[in-house]
Image (tube, rainbow, N blue to C red; front, side, top):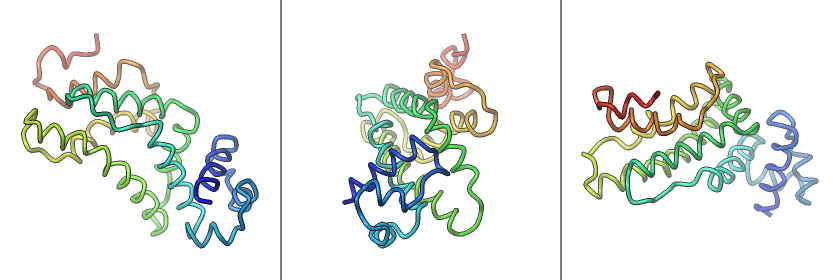
Length: 185
């Protein structure tokens, strides 16, 4: 049942966008009762977040290449590709536009906590390998993804193929990192 409901939710999201998803339509498409959906997910927003997190597992995998630079670049590249898709752009903007009421705060927190819980493993592995000093993995991931989300949500600037590597260089080398930081060649 869970798989059928999540697949139906994703189909509707891709076809009709975030505002086009109704629990009644998901239930009909999945062949389940609406009450089953409400019993499991509580509300539509929880269902949408879980469906998008499920999709993100596939579209934005957590790489393990053996090096921090390659892992961060692969992760940022996958995220960029997702954010450039219509559903990725729409979801990012809708998540940012959620209000500050308790339900919206919970939905937004739920999504970001789930995503960062997995993505911080990239940094944790690098620390364990002795590749970098003991740093806060969450801060590293936030510094990596913030410029990408900023362009989608705030400035509506395009995400270019070279942007992930440029951001990785700045994160890893800092502003005094030397020629690699110039990355805007």
